[in-house]
Length: 298
Image (cartoon, rainbow, N blue to C red):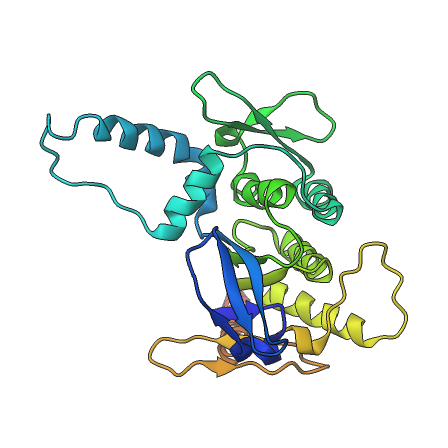
């Protein structure tokens, strides 16, 4: 797994966190600028697709069970991590106010138009829970998220957060932004993350995607080129990006950026080399077997 903070990677140790509950306003002492800063952190957990399709059912079940406490004996009380509970709460109480920075709305629209190829909508429902829908391009038929692809349900929360929650200066933490995405869409996702950085958002991700890493490397190279013409800038500076590699029973190691190789975790290369060697070996065996069969038939 690769851990990727796309902001001030050289100054990670200069910020002391005072309050650390996701989604709440926090104050941090910035030892570089010697002042207190008010920040928001937003966390998009892994398995967002499943949570988005089931959060209403889970919330309803928990509420019903809570009203029966003392009247019934439950064999097991369901629990969930703080970040999952925080994420579900935000989805259940979500309001599409679109009052955040115009840059955030623009990036959300880009994500819809270039990756999702459709619009994420919210409708009020009789139950009081928001009803999220997906409207594909070139159609007037809205789909419930339960009827949509896992890519849509995985990225819908990011669109919603950008519309109504995240602002420049905030920290956005995303687990596996590449989940359920085609390789091309994973590369597009890297561009979206870079645009968030250019808009002033602190971005932290975890990833297993070589395509995502390669495109981030390309965006850093773009940042080293003098001529930049993007209407929505997506280039990155080397000092804005840091990468760390996590392996079981191994010390955490920093992955250095190389202008020609980008970010290249060793075990990724080992897997690619192993697959290539296995493919060559099997092809040689197949050709040998095919040649022997031809000789026997003659």
